[in-house]
Image 1: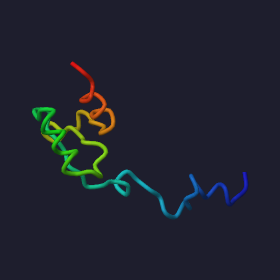
Image 2 (image 1 turned 180 degrees about the vertical axis):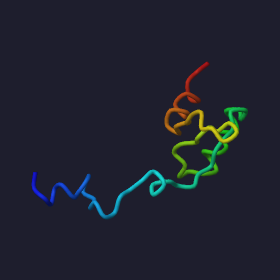
Image 3 (image 1 turned 90 degrees about the vertical axis):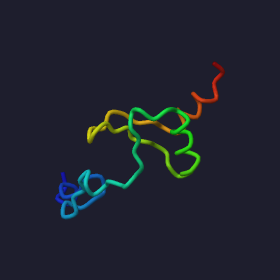
Length: 77
């Protein structure tokens, strides 16, 4: 392994490490008590929102993906 390759991970130099903290984004969250109409309203009000985390107290318990949610809502009963 060349010395140059040993100092990089996924194209980043070893001197600039990325952590989950570096990658975080602020986003809307939903409680598990919200109904599907409320989630639909969130997606309509925020067109750039692709995922809604579901959080109970401070514990993340799930994710709602826009594409999957919209496909399920469009299905007949």
